[in-house]
Image (cartoon, rainbow over all chains, first blue to last red):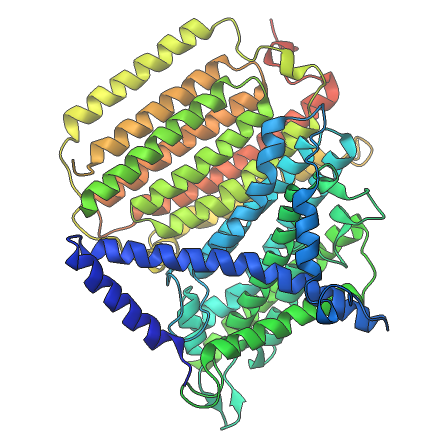
Length: 358
Length: 170
Length: 103
């Protein structure tokens, strides 16, 4: 009914015809199509945090029995736009003792990888920008580059407390990468591919006629993997209960204390963009993103994908206002002594399951 | 046209890599050198992609950039002194060092041009994860297990160095 | 001009030379470690280039590169923890101060 994939395919064919009529090769048409797709993704990933910030404020308000932003626009829906305009017009203060180049580059290094990470994510059936054969590994590898940006932010601030905040933040990020990657390994083992589009397609169908073949419904392995991935993703995006690096009551604002105006907006944008990325990955890996009532039926696949991603985002928002903050050493202890052994046990359970299937 | 595009991409990446490496070895601030090294490692991952090794490129980004460089930046940040940015970073034997490295580079380049000129790629790039996995657990399983022992030793050594004198149990 | 093997080999030779210069002339021991990482990467480019151009149907070069990356990680970890221990003792990271075993 509203499936996007055939429309996009026809658009690409007409684009190729137009380009060839102007004397260039079909490769130029392909490059142009990919450039347009990249532009759409950059636009999407820039606009989604605006919606997410508003959603967070509303959800947290309703959970605390208050109303949240209600002034700017009907029910306060333009609040984030107003916040963004305020941040753009703020003065950009650079501390004296800091390295100016590093101070300038740090927000860019934190934000840039998240746009690239959305390239292999299937937004529905047939809606992958680039179907990489190493999709999962690619996302994990590129999102690890943000930790370098956090270290640069800590150094570029020129004061010891921000540097400590940067060090703590990078240590937390690097530590929680390990259980996050290991918790996804059972999925790679059981589906035999790293391509996100193939993983989403492999989760089609039903068991016994009613239970969807999503990975979260696999006995034991699916649930443990999902829980470990969820906890590790919350820690990776520096959200409560793991937000010591940027908590307001701890190290002032941690590594982004000395960044004002547009640079602070970029840090904020990166946090919500990573929340969206983690939710999209969980929707694809564990919930069979795009799977639902079949195409042409009730709802197209991209609506299902957005629905599942929104559910995961709601989980992220819910966690923030439910759990108290973990102290830094408890956080590390939890990662290395609980999450890591359980993710390795999960891998061996997945191996056992493959053995029993034969 | 595709070949000239690939050559252009290679030229840009090569120029970037050489520039970043020069920044690494000559920069006055160690932190800037470390950031330049991180960027250089990213460009090397791009070169791996150009050579059709996608799994190795992702591993390079994951391990080198996301692991080793973070540790190195940690140590740079933890061992800084206030006066560091005013010191020169090159020692007195730089002339001999430059001559030696120039000699090695020229010898290598001359040899490479003589022996390996004019060899072109024959197969188009294909996904390599499955074949690398089969190789590591098939023909190369003994080095694979040995490397895991080396990593264990490195882990134990690093943890031991991190303990204080009291904790080491002397 | 079609991309050929010797382009990649020349690039890796240049990077290797720059790494040698850095390893020989940097005063800061972390600078020496970074130059050694540059040399590792030059060798990795060589390995993958040979694999792609001369033996494209097998992946031995890439397997060896995985090992080189892993061993470079192990070496960097141990080297950096040594540097931290030295810094705690003599409060400096410059190589000319690290001459207690000298003589």
